[in-house]
Image (cartoon, rainbow over all chains, first blue to last red; front, side, top):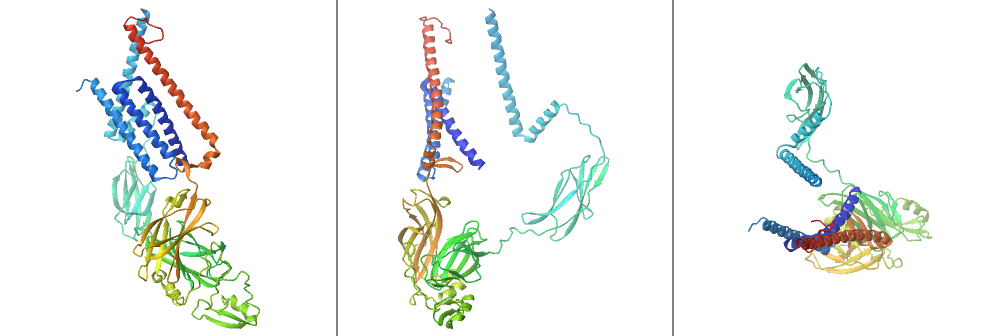
Length: 100
Length: 525
């Protein structure tokens, strides 16, 4: 039973952290331009996708197979967008270092 | 000037602190990485040493004879190999240990405090002594004797048991004839076979063959399909291990179904009463006795009426219980020869054994879901034939709340079916019963399931909230959601404020560089 409560608390904590990530990523997106902006937009989209997957998991009380498919899709979207953000950031750093 | 000096000093201090921080982190990471590449024990020892250095503990060591070791010897197994596990207590002033077996040295110079002796013979007794050696001498342990026990790879499963414990919720003794007025008797019992398949045969006629799944704790429950005619019935219960069909046990109980207004002590007001003498036995026969003798006959299991006469039930049928037809003489196989065969080998001599299994997770069906069912058909003594199967959903009051008929092709031995649930049924426990009729025999199989309201929110770890639970505590949910949204809004506003200020700063910096405005207090350069 104690494990059940810990899992529930961790899930709620995960959603709160996802909200904070969205807000702070949006704050950076407002401030910066060009590649850094695109990079953070990708990070922001990734966090949004992750938050959606968390919500879908919470509202999938009956373990519906369709919902599980959507959860898997949003997780893939999350990791794809996150990878896009990292690659964009990598390009930016390489540009700053003067690499061609 | 002073300000400039102070600023320079502050910058130097900051730079030093930053460099120190980075250097410390780097050193720590190097230290941990070095330990990871080598041995964590080394890291632990190093930290321990540092701790010991930091503390001011002073240890004084006095050399003496070793303490006496006390040995424990236990017979054990390493796989299928018998071994003797030896262990003993830590002794002070000891450099190493020797082990003697039956007075002869077995191992010498070990520093550990345990040893596994694998060169042993099953059933043989060995005596062990441990000698602790120190710089000032040696001390022996008291001798410890142990007998080597045989190792079996797995403990054998207990002999299968199955017991019929109750009839219609009342405890019964299955060794004596049970009388009931309930024409759809419900029997339950226990078995020591986990998740056993329980095969129940009711005869002499109408012959009903049913399968139910026992719970993991061995409890099973069975309710007779339909309404049995009056008479004496044998309920034969076979518990089969689902992992090993050869592991099985058979038990039975005799149940006599009597009229609602029947009195056991009175079979009518006539002087001559017809009695079925020794029912279910080879000496079974119909006899006519005088009225005073009736009580004695009923006492040893006889019942009123002709042995071959089965009283049909015409007035007990309700909308939920189907009256079963008495066994027809023309039905094949006939009622006279089937019971004997069933008794000897019930599974082999039945025409069909079927098993229905609810596949939904944990056998829980949520509202608006259907039941996913796996049906296994095993035609035993006849060619598979196209049959009509009826799926019935029965509530805890034995009422059929839904009934669906489906035909099954003869070639299909295993099929998965989707059985829709009526929308207006109550939440609770139900039984899904599959039944068909083959050669005049009623074959049924049933499985239990729970119908529950679908949870809307699943926080994980089985903490779920249904729609009605959410609505009942909607206030709390609204407050929590509003608080969360408020926090997010405040942080978002703060971020937007910082963004606006940064925009203004950047713009002012540009304007100042162009000489259009002068420096403003509170705006960083």
